[in-house]
Structure formats: structure tokens, C-alpha cells
Length: 240
Image (tube, rainbow, N blue to C red; front, side, top):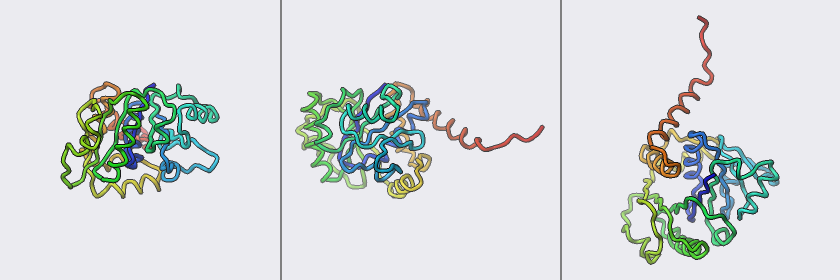
């Protein structure tokens, strides 16, 4: 089982679902833990009732509510599940309160940021708290960028160059379709992966490739195979 932390005050729900979607195409069973302060997944993406916590979103299990590893295991137990049943457990946190809770040593940690000054200001405190709690500054950076040309050293300067970026920085260019695809995902409970821009798909494939140590072609090939299987699912064979 791989454990992955997604940290940052930017809404990461779309990104995490796209990333999880690629993993499920590789045959991985994924648990996505919503430890966000506003319960973004519960209110925006699931159809859970007040007393429910586990939701199947197109083959991805979303667990809403837990803000510690102990709570994750307890909630899964109530639902006759266990963390050991999953190939990947990915936790989305965006608050100091969640960071301060008891979590395992994550196999992979990703800081998901953007050029929004409010997010950057809040993320400085969030990352410092993470580094203090874990006594480890290694993390991978994924940045959503727009047309504004922000100095590439700006965030590092805010952080006093404390993060130890463990790989090259990954960039995802914001486009005009981001909001419409999010709304489609939320209202239709489906992942419009095919509609993402080619560079976005490439970045997601790079990340999954690095997580599982497989070639990017294998990741992309799994997506194509899944698409063709789905396309042929309802076809009936003609009599000979």
C-alpha cells in the first residue's frame, strides 16, 4: 500500500480525482481521504447522507470526515473495509488542524499550489507546520499557473528556501475549461478525463509514472485500453 499526502489551501479535489482515475486504470484500488476543513469532497462531489462517510466515485472510494489516521481506520472498519484493502491511500489536507493530527510517514508528499497570493501566504504557514511536525522538508511541487508571469523564486523566498523539492517542479496550465469540467464532475458524478488538455494529461501521467515506477507509456496505454473497453461494452456481436 502506498500512502500519499496532498497539501495546500488550493481546492485540490479535481486534481486528486484525475490522478486517482489514472491509478484505477492501472488496476489500483484507491482510497481518497477528504480531510479538508470545508469537506470539499462531501459537499461538492459525493451524494452522501449525513451519517454516511464512504462514497464510490467512478471506482474511487472517497472517505469523508476523518482528520487522523486512527479515524480513517475506524471509519473504514465501520464500513467493513481496511486500509490494507487498498493499493493507494491518498489524503487531502488544507488546514493547520489536520496537519497537526497523527498521520503515518507518507510515501509521497505533494504540495499543490498556484499563483494566488492568498493561497501562497496561507501555504507558507501550512508547509512550515508540516515540516516541523514531521522533521522532514522533502516534498514534490505541483503548480497550477495562469498567464501572469510570477517570478519563479517568489514562493521559495516566502518559504526562506526551506522546502527540499525532491523532483523537478510540475506545472499545469490553467485554461478556460477548468470550471466547466469541475461542474460536470460534481453534477454528473463522472470524471471527464478525456476533455483535459494534453499537457494536463501528460503531467498526471508523469506523476503516476513516478509514484509506481512504471514507464509513462504504460500509464497512458492503460487509459486508452480502458476507453476502448468502455466503448465496446454495450456492443452486441452480430450472428455469423
